[in-house]
Every structure is written in structure tokens, then in C-alpha cells.
Length: 367
Image (tube, rainbow, N blue to C red; front, side):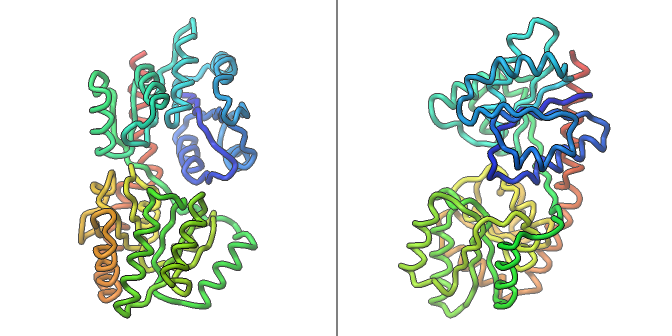
């Protein structure tokens, strides 16, 4: 079985998810070929040792030029199946496959998002859905949304939870080493928010909750790991709320295992999330999670057993949950232990890829 992945990866994006996906597929006997419609030498270097072929189209936004190249690659590689990752790669893969005169391999549309927003995106989503033999989403909540948007294609939709691992890097970068040494030297009750800094991720809610706890006399250290266009606005809010001593901006950290080792709890105060991989990483690391009751988080977390759910945009509720965990370390440990067991039985990359392979084999057997 040869699987052709069509992806849209930029240089600054991490590759842990893809590395594990490709590694497990190879272990299970599949051949993997990657087509990146963008140009990312960093991504190529990260995955090249795990794949049988790699094509970089280097279009970086000029995606309309991808069709001739994709057609040539499809003729060259003759894959058993094509896996599109998200809307744009799946859209162009569907168009390229539609132009093949010979027998066409089935297309799987990997759809991580919820409701499709914007006219162009809706058209692309519709074309990808129409051209796909299977639409794989990351949670039952996202499956419900996809079926509502595409009632005629609802039978194509399958939910598979995302499995991730805490892949150990050989050495941290010099910047990461400095950051981690500083955090280790000033040990405090550490609350981790690992996300790109943008409004939907709820950084403002996290700051409000930190301020609530400070006023209650409950000290915490809020670790904001990640970068984003809203960083300057969040930094300004930190200063305005007088939280300079409580909030630490680490910037991007590629090897998050070492950050998770310093965290007492992870928060995911998002206003919307399909199925955040950071929650799975926290489960794997044995770090308790407090998250917004949105998207796939509602099915991943069993409140009080494998984590805690709070209403989105409710800083008081988030502060209450953090105060409860800080005051009850035994409860925090038990929740983390339960979550780690869920990870072991449901959320490893091996389990995820076995489920994908079942879908792949069924589709290939149908043609």
C-alpha cells in the first residue's frame, strides 16, 4: 500500500504529529509519499527519513499552480490512496484526481476544523467533501458538525481521535536551555497554556483567572508557551493587570516534554477547539487538564475523573478549578493517573494509525 499525503506545511510549524503518523505507517508496512504544497526545508528535514518520497511544490499561497504538479506526481507515484490534510490540500487533491483518465485512487479528506467559515473556504470544503471517499474528523463533535454541513455525504464521515507522542529530542536549543533553567531555578505552582497566541485560544481569560487568584492570595505562575500575532496585546494586558511577576512568556518551545515536566496543571481556555493535541500531550505526560467545555474536549475529558471542564470565557470558574487542584494535590494526581490510562488505551499514535489503516484498507478493497 502506497499512501500519498498532500499537506500544507510552513517552516515555523512543528512536525511531531506527522513524524509519528509516518513512523507508525512505515512500521505497519505502508509506503509513504509526501507532497507539501508549500516550501518548508525544516519540515522536509524532519520527515524525510520516515518517508519513501518527498515533493515540495513551494507555492506558498499561489496554490492555483498546484494542479499540474499534482497531476504529474499522481502519474509518477501511482499511489493506492491519497490523504489530504485539511481543506486546501484536500481541495486541490480532489481536483487533480478528477482529471485523471486512468483508475483513480480514493481520496481521504482529513478535516480538523468545525464550522467552515468564509465563502471560498465553503466552496473548497464542498469540493473536497464531494471528491473524497472518506472524511476523517478528530472527534464525534466534529463529525456531527460535518454531517450537518454535508447531509448528503454524512455516511462518509468517520471520527478518529488524534494520537500523539512526546517525542524526545536529542538536545534542547540554547534558547530553550536558558528558558528551562530559569523556570527550574524559580520553582512555583506552574499553570501551562501551550498554544499560539491568538484570541480564540483564551489567553485573556487565563490572565483574568490569574488576577482573580492573585487577589485571593493564591500564587501561581502562568507559563505562556507559544508565539502569535496577538502577543503584543497580551503582553500589554499583563502589564495593565499588574501580572508581570506571575506571567512568563517562553516563546516557541519545540520540545514540550521538558515544559510539561515543569507544569502542575495545563489549561485550555479556548473559545473553540476541535480536538487539541496539547490535551493529549498533557494526558501522556500525567499533567492534569482544566479546559473549556467546547468541541472535542467535551468527549475527551470526563469531568472530575480525567480532567475538569469549565464554561468558556468564565475566568472565575477557571480560577476556582485551579485553586481546587492546588489545594488538593492527591486529587490532581489521581486525575492525571486516570488521564494517562486513557492515553495508553485510546490516544497513542499506534492506536490512531491502526484506525486510519482500517479505513484505508477498506477503501482500497472497494476499488
